[in-house]
Image (cartoon, rainbow, N blue to C red; front, side, top):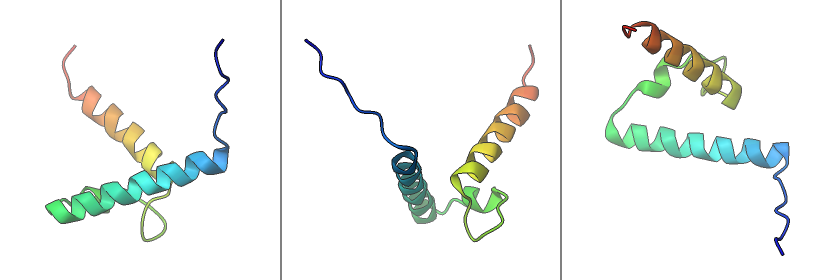
Length: 68
């Protein structure tokens, strides 16, 4: 018999994304990377939505430079 796994709520997911982003920013700062400063955002740091939009656009940009 399998146990049912509860799905996280949207606010829980957003909190986890924000924590992951904070860890990523701190890790990059410690390693001297400026990748976070290249992400367009309205505030001091990107929101999860701004990060996802940038990552999608960056993926398309990188893929368009590859030959088929």
